[in-house]
Length: 500
Image 1 (cartoon, rainbow, N blue to C red):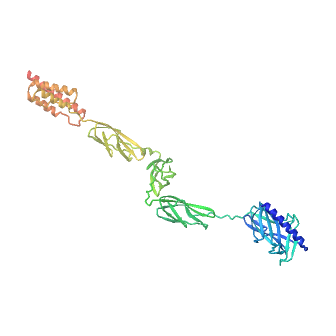
Image 2: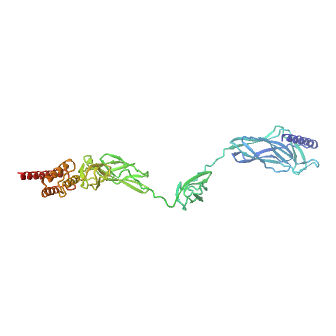
Image 3: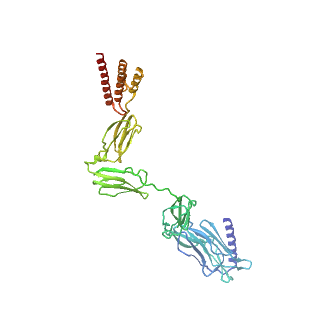
């Protein structure tokens, strides 16, 4: 490019010399460089024009130099088939114009101006200038293109235009503002949201399989979440959409760690929600008890309900506030018995002596059961009966269940008497063990010595009458043994009387 420019310059110099020789009439030419604006905002364009005053040119050659830090060359605005303008180097434009017809010696299209367009870049003052570095000159023609003359611009002379570039004033535009920030919908439902500050926006959804949007109208498609975005002024605003099934699980009610709470005046008690439901706390009688974040404070004697509200449902705990001197009587249940002994099949009623409401239970229902305080003996063994109040306080009764009295002694007596003779039946009996066997032996000996069926029968009859009934205790057995002993003694006494 540079080599071509130099060749063109040499050719033009030769042409100008020829013209100078031909022409004897030389007029001085004046020119000016003007800009459409002397102050331009960064990013805007402006025009600069090189103009001959009261003259036209058939031949021109010059350079346009510009501050490349402040300006950017856009284009040459003058359109002419004889005009060539090229970016010679960064910051310089080379301009060549020749409309002379040297064959006829006439000018085909003389011009008087060339315009250029630039774009302002960085803030500050910058200069654009026309420079004639080659002492070429300008061939002028009158407006009728008949009288040619030569005029030169002194080598090194410059025409300049000063332009100040200012910072572009950027108007701060507002962010779009939405009427909603979070929305919950069921499948198939729709919801209209709007821009509250008038910003023009475009709408989009990041998950159209869950929710779509058109002109601010959101439609729920399937269960899940989606983010709806409104974009305007190169800024965004979003709304979160949660889509649920039409049939939703019912939100749980809050569950409290306590249902009834006894307190002394001035005491505090912390209760909690055991199933994680978020609640707000309140008291229906703040003169008796107050609550804050689950912490209950007893104020005065009386009752109050502490209420936890969550998921549009409530749970309550009853607080009973008493004076310090009677609170102990209320806390724990007191029972009428601490220990009970029963035979199988027997029962006994146990009562709560201080009026506390309790629930009853047995730790061994195969031995003893309990219902509303009534204990029933089932089988031999030991069981613990428990009375528990609403606050978890306990009171217990130890229950020992014994077997019924055994019939083994009666069986042994019958067997021994049977051995003494077929007619000797129903002899005296007693408790199981060695004492009963010993007595049976005495009865047998008496029967065999007498040989009298009637005495044996009397003895057996008396013994049968003295047989203990099922369920009698050890004391009854001892009485029977005493009666049997008396009968035996009577028989012996009669025998001795007969011998005499």
